Length: 417
Ligand code: GLV
Ligand code: MN
Ligand code: MN
Image 1: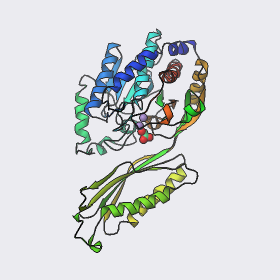
Image 2 (image 1 turned 45 degrees about the vertical axis):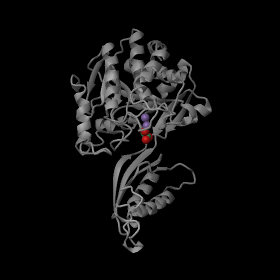
Image 3 (image 1 turned 90 degrees about the vertical axis):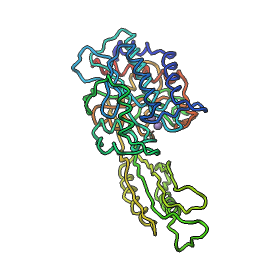
Image 4 (image 1 turned 60 degrees about the horizontal axis):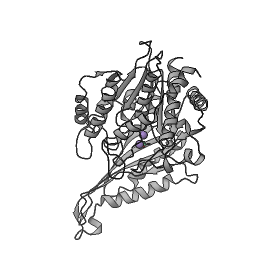
């Protein structure tokens, strides 16, 4: 590892990193310490404006694209070479934590500033990316900005997607883009030399094994579906069993059967119904419509394919007098990260003095999509009790710094290679 890479890492400033993270956490702050900063909301716009201001103060170059991914660049000496990139997301779950996503963005910003403070001009530019709508809580699918950038989905299919209040993505997107009118739009799939994303682990392993750095080997496969059941609203007191088209009873039968399908002795399959709407939502009206989502995950494509094949037949089997529509929202296959990037992260962590562990990611990340475009990897840091997607999510400042020191060394090493 070159001495410049280590010098840059030594310039990572814990206080500056923590202050910026806490400043970002003010936007959409919730009473129990978390944030509600959903994609393309006013809070998301404020978050973008805050980081853009910091970037302008440091004279970094800033661009955006058609889905409002944000690119912040420390310009290298070879301006025509593709950048070495890092990043994550600023949007949150509706009751999310301060660190999921924000750590990778603010930490990436700290890496750029540390390199600048070390007086280093890297050969390739180094770029920070804040990907739009990673969480997918408001507009589905999640990992939207990175999937579009990688060419895995098309923007025309996303524009009419609505949030729970009926707001169309295209309107929220145009408000977001209008808030940064001076930024140039760059095309999707613009080249990158490499991509490394820093993230809190969102699980308990690093804390339990007392390791500072997770060298991420890959991401398990992630599939989402939407299931809509159309029944008929009717009076709860007067409608006999034989006349009921009860969407909720159909949903219950489907979900019980899905739970059996997903049962796994080895506890490897992950199965969640995270969104469930039942309409009209009145005690004395038989539910006429139910909509719920299925999120299931597994590291092996063979197992995923087997479950995938059975989902629609199970939903149809229990339809009875109701109508059932199943749509697939996300199909992210398992991802294996680049071996050379893993080696680099290991070398950087041990040169700086942080112990590390090779580990897969249970959560989905933008890095999964970007891995199709360039050599990609991820760095995990511990989070308290492994708790995430929860307002109580927390991480120690020293652990965050270890991750960003490692990231900074890797970025400089790659940029000078
Ligand atoms: C990302 O937030 C995921 O759901 O894995
Ligand atoms: Mn995340
Ligand atoms: Mn998340």
